[in-house]
Amino acid sequence: MTSEGWGTPPVEPIGQHYIVCGGNALAHRLVLELVEHYEVPVVVLVPDRTRDHAPRIEQLDGVAAVVEYASVTEEALRAVRVETARGIALVDGSDQENIHAALSAQGHNPGIRIVLRMFNQRLGSNIERLLRNGTALSGSATSAPAFADAALSRPNSVQVGDRFLHIAYDDDIAADRICVVADRIDRQDLGRIRLLPDQEGDSASFVRLAGEFGDGGPIRSATEARRAAEPATAPDEPSPAAGGVAALQTLPSEPAVRIPWWRRLRWRLLDTLRFFTSARLRVVLITALAAVLFSFGLLWYLNGDFAWTFYASLLDLAGAAQPDQPGAGDGSGTGGTWQRIAQVVITFCGITFAPVATAIMVEVLASGRRGQHRSPGAGTRDHVVVVGLGNVGTRVVAQLHGLGVPVVGLESDPQARGISAVRALGVPVVVDDGPLAEQLRRARLKHSRAVVAVSGDDATNLEAALEARAVRPDVRVVLRLFDDSFASHVYATLDNVASRSTSYLSAPAFAAALMGREVLGTLSVFRHVLLIAELPAELGTGLIGLNRHDLEDPGGVRVLAVRLARSPRLYHWNYADRTRTLEPGDSVVVATTRSGLARLNTTLTENT
Image 1 (cartoon, one colour):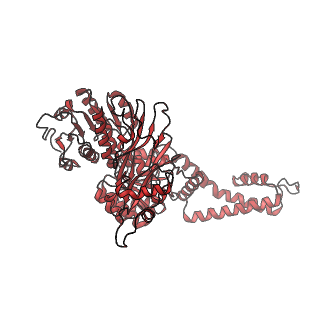
Image 2 (cartoon, helix red, strand yellow):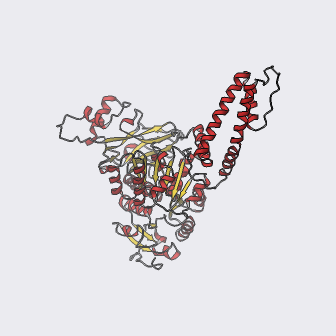
Image 3 (cartoon, helix red, strand yellow):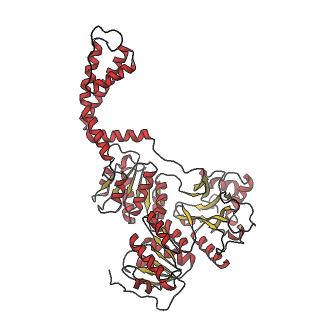
């Protein structure tokens, strides 16, 4: 670490700029968003110019200056001209450091827009009350649902009103779709994807399909679309519309993935039984159980009274049996010699069961204590293995646990901040710095449904994926990867794999918040991101007087719904009147690309 203050502050006075404090992956993506899509001057305050993403940030075109300070101090804020800045984003450091820096920035510039990253969302919502013009966001909370949904092979969704918007592909696209959001999808070349394509030119085939089937007709898969709507081509001539299609559609409710209680109870009992017993003892217990069931059946046959038989069998198992009385043939319990033999068998089997039952009860009650460590046992089945218990990993575990899905955490660093939080949920954790293959074995990979690798290093995450595939070639793998080129190669090489980038998913939301726009959520189309935002038409926003045609931008912005001031709870999806201008109190829901939101922000600013 270099000495505090080393670096080159802006040589000339600068104003109306934006400040990004941090040198991590999120800071890198956020700077890219601001300089490439919003085209605003950015000054970056990094803790060390030689480490993390700081060298790559310094090489970005459009960055006004990169200043190095070990922490965001008063001197550092003056060096980046906070008093003349329009906004500041604090995306590095601890929650306490970011709060202190935010309040200091507000003291220097009361009108500055402040966006700070907070892991503790509850604390963040309280801090927002202390800021005149600020918001607190969590990058891990923004991206965790995408990782969890990818692990469960279910669509990632964003709630708008009472609907859940999600992305469907090809043959999964239903007739009640809202709009096409991508075409030319090719897993071997993800760079060909077009987001929010125009319904002209290369997408004319979809227009012809709409004309053929009507507005409510189904969208066919890419192959069917080409055959139905494209003119005949030579066998060796590629079709311009080749590739998959993605559409935005709604779910009436978020799909549930909760495991049935009886399956979880069975796994738990099996886990506990195997924890306390060896293979030889389990054979003895199974034999004893079979003897008890046979004896119970014999007693029931001899007496014909199920309730009395059940009652007597329980007493026999507990060692409190009462011997029958010879000559009592009233059906109250006397069955002769065979009944006595059956009762003796049940009593002696009860002696075998009693210690094991006591141990199981003690273990179940003890493991229920909050925060007590529990390793994955033999009964762990159909679970998700989360590799890396940092901020993102902890959020993913909590998300899956809240859905009722069994989870096992895996972490090599015993000091990782997420271990205690995961243990507090009662989730099994494997903490080991040994070979990754051995850690995955201990996490019972062979019986898992998916592996989610979300450590902070791309190479470690890829290693986890390859080790998992070596053990189970068909296991679902979800990777956290920063590098886009790296992720494209992974998609082209591995099947049943999903790649997500925390910074890629959360940076657009941070950039929009810095510009004063609220993003409801993000949806992934492979490595590309769609933002779902709701824009209120209020005085000073620039929306009043605009219509749907003014807002929509092919390839950038698509209006999904309009909410009118006279009926604020009702969303009009695919609002038909494209010429109606927005009035005060109205709002629009849009699907937009990152660059589309930036252009929309510029338009609204100019219209203010």
